[in-house]
View (spheres, rainbow, N blue to C red):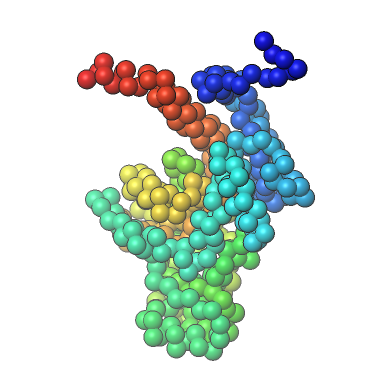
Length: 353
């Protein structure tokens, strides 16, 4: 009997049953904090339509309101920059550990710097019967462009060199590439930047998308090969637009079969699995090239957090399945804790033994 509107205290078992029932009835709520450009490319009608059918609701996060006052969310999906936003997310994760944040801000920062981006690949030193995965030799220049020619000679890097901005901040400029053909032109560059030794690769790169445990690979046109004659007769720095965009797809092109052959699936899956663990990320892509004239020597040249998934074939199916798997995993763990408290797991293990 309740007196004066008093609500009786519910047991933990009753709370668990209510939670289980709610999980089956409620939608999966994904709060997203993306730029307008990213929202348009990612939240395409085909993704939102399929998400609704699967019980997934995307809700825009209002950056003018405290994050903890919004929701409740099952997942927070984000790709915004800035120290203030990172701190907001870290505080939110401390207050709401039950919410999955894709991905942790500190892990994302690791791949926003090209000096640290490829270190995990180099440390991995992946080599098996399917091939070897390396990183190009590279040199980081923070300032003083006049010192670049001597630094390149001291590091033993060979020309031509791929020139990339040091910081990847999501802007188009941070993905622009240049190719430097001679020592004299190096002193005209604008640090901070990374100089990467160019590897001939048939003008094709493999863009490997990772969404949780799912791995999808597509071909993209890349920088053209440079032969000895071109290297001798070329000077200066040549700028290239973003070469691996969807408009540069090479999947249907008439290519040399040795150039077009995709990297072995087991090699890609192992690489993705190891990098997920080392980077602490679940949403990223890897740009890989195969050294021209080889079948099994590959180089990782870039890693990007939360890439343009809208350009990935069947991305709406892969992404919605991934989101559902995150919550299902939480549900299973919580159900196991519930059964363990009730003694069901102990009884089952005793009967099996």
